[in-house]
Length: 244
DNA sequence: CCCCAGGGAATTC
DNA sequence: GAATTCCATGGG
Image (cartoon, rainbow, N blue to C red; front, side):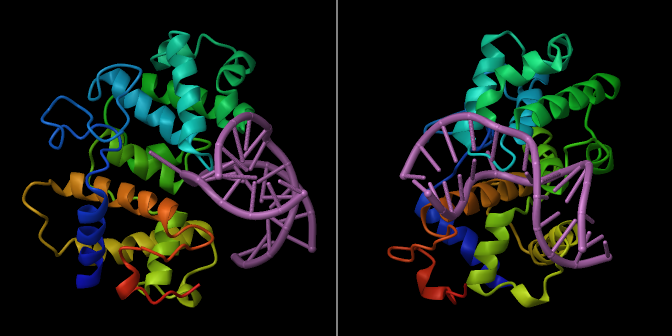
């Protein structure tokens, strides 16, 4: 599917690299940032603390704006909670208070604690199944963690992705399963089926390509393809079917 | 006032 | 098994 790669190249040309969580190969190895990407507040990006921060960020931003999630990350860092060990020393209600800005704070406090217990019990790169077995980690959060914390070549699907590709004409809304989890896996399989065959621009690894693609979709959806689409000046407008 | 945000689980039909 | 409902803050 050539149009899938054209979507990427158009968005990449238009918005540039997003660098959601530092991509060493894009940032000259320093980690960040010339474009407003997330510099990391827990520790160095590819260290234990950096990976833990990505995992926390993935949970805290569930159905929540990144600015609200980031406030919670900053509050944790300010409190000296930069790893699973220290996090578990805080009772859930105290933790909930700290991450209040991220919304759903009681639930997310529990999620962070269960994730912390897991990381301590099973250090190192987690499998998708292990992540999914944790309460509060579903498909998207698990894949975000695998991609952005552990640099696994996983394509993250979210509501933006489905909305954009449906409107654009790559996906048929009526033929997608109703069930959330099944729909996620179907869409991911569809995308991977096509992307696995293509060659990646040589300045990007496959992992970085997927990381940038997802971040670009989010960026583009915020600017032009939200619940209410704003098609004026949309860089994809010429090829978009504008289905809603 | 409304709707939306880098979802997921529990509950109910 | 599919459709609600709940979780909840902050910005537009």
